[in-house]
Structure formats: structure tokens, C-alpha cells
Length: 410
Ligand SMILES: Cc1cc2nc3c(=O)[nH]c(=O)nc-3n(C[C@H](O)[C@H](O)[C@H](O)COP(=O)(O)OP(=O)(O)OC[C@H]3O[C@@H](n4cnc5c(N)ncnc54)[C@H](O)[C@@H]3O)c2cc1C
Image 1: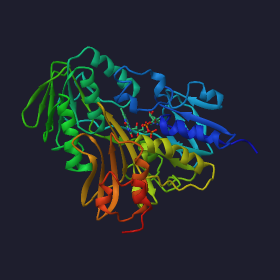
Image 2: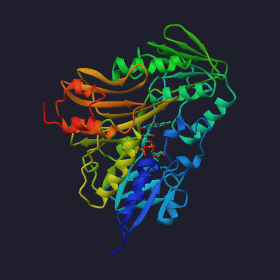
Image 3: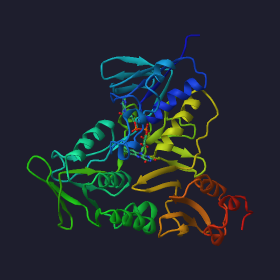
């Protein structure tokens, strides 16, 4: 029998990890990993953190060492965009005109920054941050500027603001919400992160959006919806991302807030899978489709899709997890909570060393540990147990979290 070709479109974290997993699992067919960026597959978290600040080398961000692909006989095609999929013929078209056949296809096309639709957004100096190339440009901007306006107090904006402050720039953050990430985490954590930035000297202009970027050729000011004028040398916009679905959509693959996949990460087209930021996957634990835009999901879902491509028994049910580092505040969050009854705290909330729990009744539906480590696994176990917990014990640091996981239902 001739060897099969497994093709992966999107050579970033999910795609790079999936390619490695195929070999790890003993697949001895052809692996073709195609990526639009002219880079080795890399991880993006350093792009708002150490790499942005010039504290780490490019290589540290790579998903695998540079020689990994050759060593594992993975055909990495860089700087090439797949422009069409013919799912019935199992063939893709690449922008250089080549047509390539596959036996199984994995789409890890990720996401791209949402653009801000206001006057002046096309001015030079209005930046977005998704790629290493974007980050290299911003590193130079940070080097030769003294003032930056950050639009959006989500994770990208907040981490960029923290790094810019650490490099000594004057930073103003503008966000229409009253508190950073308030819709996802509620007012308590929103206020905590607002205060962290204020304590580090960031001007937080909250509850106001951006009406316009102004300047002569390049941005010099941001005008907010409250009429404030923010002078700046450049601006960074982080107002969310959009899954890159056009390729799949044009091929007739079902879309709904991303590429719709089942718990085996199979799309609506036979032999075509999707993973990472682009995939809206059926989650067996939550019994709904969830699209997770975080590092750990790409890290784990890519390999899970690879195992599904090999016909293994796969049911991707990891509890969503992500992390963020801002100044000296590190945090991990696990869970998926769209509504809750209350947020309770364990530890030193004012001192910034605590675990926050989102409770539905007395069940933990999400948890965030801030400058407290080695507890996130227990947070996940509490979520997964769906167990009613004794809230007094949960918030008492003298009660071990793992003992609550083991406790019978209250
Ligand atoms: C600056 C930054 C910082 C972050 N920090 C954190 C963090 O601290 N914690 C956390 O949990 N998460 C973080 N994230 C999120 C995390 O990086 C993403 O969840 C992750 O990158 C998703 O990986 P992916 O492989 O699914 O998609 P992507 O990383 O988006 O990669 C998709 C790739 O596919 C390529 N592609 C798309 N279409 C085609 C095509 N038609 N043909 C060929 N190639 C194509 C793209 O060029 C891209 O390289 C951060 C993201 C950014 C941008």
C-alpha cells in the first residue's frame, strides 16, 4: 500500500505540535505542514512578554528546534498560503499555483486581530500584534518612542502595556468597558487588574472607546469617545481576534464562530479536522461547542487532532486554561464560566497572592490563581468534580485544596 499524506494547513503551535505528534504516534507516511508565515512554527505568548522586551532570543519561542522537521521527515513549507480546498477531491491549492493531494487534512489556521473601524486607523503607527514580524516592528517602536496609546484592556493590550511600562514608556490604556476584561471575569478581577496597572503608572482611560486616530501621515493622538486627547508616538490595538475561517468556508465546511468540529475534532467534511484558535469544538464536559483562543488549547488540541487523524479514540475534553504575566503578577485561569453567582477569594487579595473561585451555587465553575502556584490542577479537579464545596473551607488557606476535591458532596 502506498504511504498516506497527512497535510496540516497553519504552521504555528497547533499545527507544529500536531505534526510532531503524528511521528510520535508512529505515523510513517508523508507529513506536509504548510504555513503562510515565513517562520519556523513559534509560540505567541513571548510576543507580549520577554521577547517583546528584548529579554529572550527568537529561538526560545520556537515550537520545535530548527532541525526537528528534517529529523522527523516533516515537509515544512514556509511562506506559502493555501488558497483553496477541494474536499471531494482531497486536494489543496497553494498560492504558488501548486495543487497537493492529501489523505487527511488538519486545519490550524488560527485567528487574526480584529481591526478597529474608526477614522485614522490606517495611519502609520497604528499597530496590531499577532506575529513575530509585528512584534519585531513594535520592538523598534518601543526602542525609539516615549509614549504609547494602547487600545483595548484585554490580555494582549494589558500585557503589551505592562511590557511598555517596564521599558519606561508612558502608557495610556483605553477601553470602553468600566474595568479590564469585566465581561469575562466580573468586577472583582477587573478592578484588581486595573489597580495593578495604575500602581505601575499606567493611565487607565476606562469606560470610553476610541473615536479616531489623528495625525499627519502617522498617528500622533487618539481621540476618545469622552473627548479626551491622548498624545502618543504610536498606538497598539488589541480588541480581540477573529477565527481564520474563509478557507474552510469556501470549501463548504460548516462554520459557526470558527470551524465547527465534534469531540474528535472532525469537521463536516470527511477526513478534514480542525484544532486550535480556529476550532469551535464540541466539549463533552460542557456539552456545547467552545472555541478557546489560548495557548494551552492549541498545544493540546493539535496533538489530539493528530491522534484522531490516525483513527485513535479521541474525545477532547480538557478544561480551558490560560495564563498571563503582567509586571510581577503571574496568573493561571481554568474553567469556562459565562455566568456565576459569586466570586470568592482564598489568600491575600490585597497583597495580590490569592486564588479566586467563580461559584455557581456552591460549585466551582472557574478559578484563577494569582501569584500562587501549584494549585491549578486542583482548581481543575474541583471544576470537573461538579461537587458542591464548603465555601468556608474553600476560602480558608489552612484547608488543603486537594482535600476538598476528595471530600464527599456537601
Ligand atoms: C501576542 C500574543 C500573546 C499571547 N499570549 C498568550 C498567553 O500569555 N497565554 C495564553 O494562554 N495564550 C496567549 N496567546 C494566545 C495563543 O498564542 C494562541 O491561542 C495560539 O497561538 C493559537 O495557536 P494556533 O496554532 O491555533 O493558531 P495561530 O497561532 O493563529 O497560527 C495559525 C497559523 O496559520 C497560518 N495560516 C492561516 N491561514 C493559512 C493558510 N490558508 N495557509 C497557510 N497558513 C495559514 C497563519 O499564518 C498562522 O501562522 C497569545 C497570543 C498572542 C498573539
